[in-house]
Length: 201
Ligand SMILES: NC(=O)c1ccc[n+]([C@@H]2O[C@H](COP(=O)([O-])OP(=O)(O)OC[C@H]3O[C@@H](n4cnc5c(N)ncnc54)[C@H](OP(=O)(O)O)[C@@H]3O)[C@@H](O)[C@H]2O)c1
Image (tube, rainbow, N blue to C red; front, side):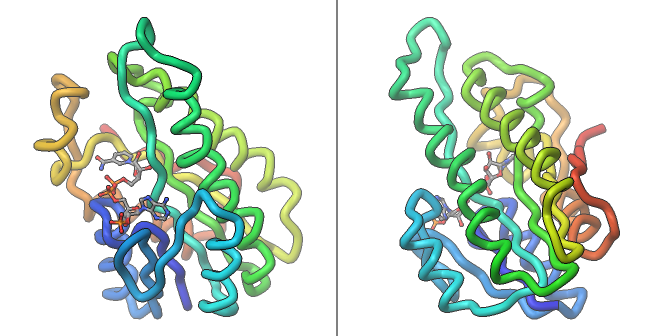
């Protein structure tokens, strides 16, 4: 399969790109500043340009999307809007514009995270945005035509990201990125749609 991975230079996306390449897929790597192709998921024009450049694909993976972390007692609406514009609408944009470039039977896999269901201090934006992405996936799955599928992968904190984000997730057991990447394989190669594949415990 030809698979577009957006966020392919990141902790999650690089592991996904690696396992897909190992399984014989043709992987097109996209990132904001690095990769085979550059894209900004917060821009319709940039995402349209990405799809025009990549052509038809069998699967689209999003492993990108920024969030705001900070205490809810000090959070401003502008702070909250960071996650809405980046991780929520950015991924929804990839799905809405990307459905047109998918071959029949193709798939879209978005990324959420454990904070949707297991709150952490400072994580209210993450909780809301991840849950909204999961709601979009469930809603969109029942409407997509041509056998197209859409799922989300919800990883817990990656072992590789402990140094960067471990303080936000005290006592949370991490998983290796390679394990999280298998959930994306399941979404791409398997038959399921409208699912959230949780990668924890
Ligand atoms: N790491 C974890 O432990 C973990 C756990 C659960 C969920 N997640 C979720 O997984 C996703 C990826 O996290 P990560 O830790 O892998 O992040 P990361 O290491 O910072 O990588 C982010 C990737 O997305 C790209 N990117 C960032 N902003 C973009 C934009 N506006 N348009 C297009 N591409 C953009 C980056 O490209 P550049 O490098 O060029 O900027 C990079 O390839 C996030 O939504 C995060 O919430 C992560």
